[in-house]
Length: 374
Image (cartoon, rainbow, N blue to C red; front, side, top):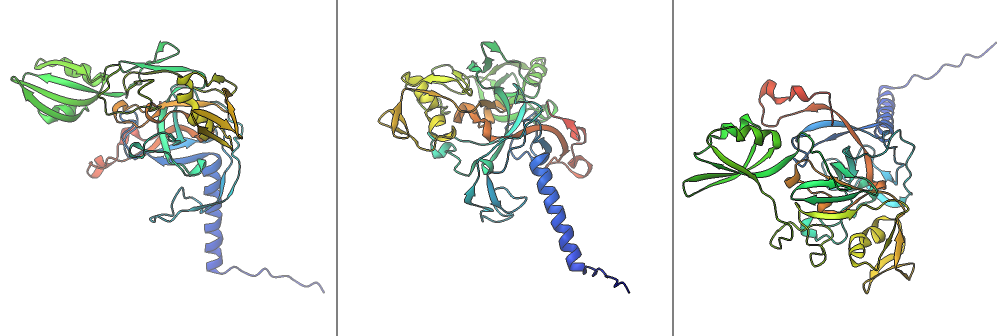
């Protein structure tokens, strides 16, 4: 007589545990391989992306990175939720590889990446991010220049390979408005302008604003506006408080509005390090980001494995990123290049957007839901 095998029924606690485990594994795989959700915490991309925009970032566009820091609490980044306890261990670190994607980073893409920082950057200006590569702070910016491009900024106009770059619709800059009368704050709200300050002089009213070109054109059409001019720091201005990469004002006295030209490192590109400008621009890349295990700067020279080098060939591509909110963005002007292995993915669409100052039905920015990111 055959013996019937009866499968033992799982208890409710075991069923709950299995369900949670499956959900965590599935969410982790989707987050790693396909899409990851992000929230915009700062205004560095306003008005293109707004604070409290919730968006999906595609990992498959540029190719998914293999994990480097594998000892980590699932679905965390740097800290365990609601604590200051690290959510990872560096006891095991694997090399990062990138799976095949169906495109590469292009000029004008909106990209999420791990903030590399700059080894030479003073700590009070942001310093250098010492987390493992895949756990460094996530930034979102627009790719201005790809590997091999020559980027320069002249009087706030960006040029790539000597061609003026067309500004995205949401790009904002600082301006000063001169008016014959005081301006009602509701006017700024009407034209989606941010007032930064105001004052009077000789019977005139002056307002510092942050605005898009479209908003400035609307304001210029008002009869009580005398003039609007951009707040541009002149080339060579030594009084600017905005210290830019590579922090060598004696060689390159650049600022936020007049910067470069600078060539973005490209895999296979060789630079002459006897040229002082090249040494200043690329020494941090060589010693920190280009996967040289034993590289250092000593006595004004770069040493790799104990031998000084006079030229160098880059091992990976790099990118130059800038925020669309140009004067309120911490970007490549201030800390340098983004290495290819720091690229997380391409921002593709907004699935939710919340206005923290809105009330009831106005709390959700309905027009932004499921809109593509351009």
